[in-house]
Amino acid sequence: MKFPGEPFKIKVVEPIEQTTREERDRLIREAGYNVFNLPARSVYVDLLTDSGTSAMSDNQWAGMMLGDESYAGSRNFYHFQESVRSIFGFRNIIPTHQGRMAEYLLFSVVVKEGDQVPNNTHFDTTRANVEHNRAAALDLAIDEAFDPHSEHPFKGNMNVSKLRNLIERVGRERIPLVMLTVTNNSAGGQPVSIANVRAVKSLLDEFGIPLFFDACRFAENCYFIKTREAGYEGKSILEIARELFSYGDGCTMSAKKDALVNIGGFVALNDDRLAEGITTKLILVEGFPTYGGLAGRDLEAIARGLVEVLDEDYLRFRIGQVRYLGELLDKAGVPIVKPIGGHAIYLNAKEFLPHIPQSHYPGQGLVVSLYRDYGIRGVEIGTVMFGTKDSKTGTPIYPKLELVRLAIPRRVYTNTQIDYVAEAIIELYQKRDQIRGLKMVHEAPVLRHFSARFEVI
Ligand code: F0G
Image (cartoon, rainbow, N blue to C red; front, side):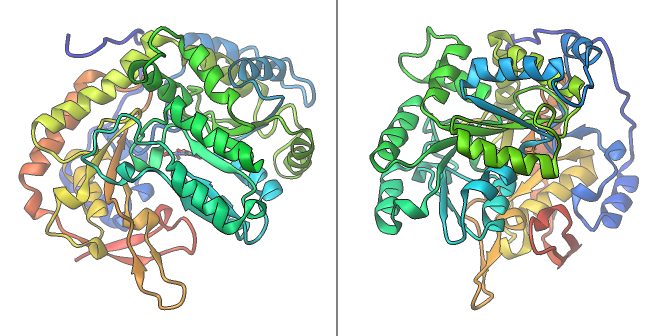
């Protein structure tokens, strides 16, 4: 067998329209060469994100029909709370409509102007929400995280000595919390080991600093722990998750990833005083604490998805499908980030397109060609997303990595479609010298990648 087979069969299908290269050429031009502006119906295989794109199970859909849409005290909230608590173990469970609202609420209560928030690597909305509170978002992943060739099994790990230096330099009072993103999305979907979590935890205990997780892809992270970290092979994913979160004081979660739903999120934490502050804000911007911006049926789907995602047959298939795509590309010499991460393949655009300088957005150029020539939509994770300017001189500051992420939605695409993606990229790699760079002609002040517009150079 090529890889672990699907532990499910298809009951409902969604037709995909086929488009021609000419149509896509026009559409991408009209979209300002930004794939966020494309109509999704014009995409054949959509690898823009694994977020909110999962196929739900029959059991989740059945749960949707049991939505109790009471304003307060919906029975689905209690089920959701029980399901979250049984995995994460935190006392206060606060539902939100998606992950960034959980971040917004947590940081607006915990972070003050001038604070510093370390993370292994902030996701873009996490960084934006820290900075929105006039605090600094610091990425302190281990050095290997920035080396696309390093085969370190836990490239998501935090650099504990850098973290110690930071705390000693700026002082405990300026660091309201430390975050660990599991898996580390922005640096390649790479896992964090339990050993690293323990080391971070014991350092933070010395200073009394709380540890929070950005838990979006926790089950995928736990699967890597089970298959790569000594001592965990015999444990269930649930046992590993419980141990992982036992070292934390709370978490934010976008349920749109590892809760296998299309919308939802939560903040969970032990501190009752902070939870009260967050709940007060929640009522202002989201809703009553037993629904937090979601319908009762959405809470039910999360409660059930969190159980399904812990299933090892599911995770073996999931991680196996991503690895299968990565190995096809790797064998053909296409430069990708290694080891292969949990939810996505990351093309190394700097090596794919050595003729395009970072100032001409090689990652974006690759994304545009992949769509125009093959109808595949990926996303740039490089200068468009993370590039900044020096606040005094205006000189551009480039990120270390220039990547294109091909995120695989959960339980959505068949392996025939995965084969198509591999063949397309291999063909594109063979004609890579035809790909051109871009010039940014419009950008918003924050999260510019969503709305930026480009012209071909
Ligand atoms: N944290 C991480 C690590 C994420 O990957 C995301 C979303 C969020 C927080 C925010 O969650 O979208 O529910 O508000 N990542 C998606 C992605 C959008 O494509 O990687 P959200």
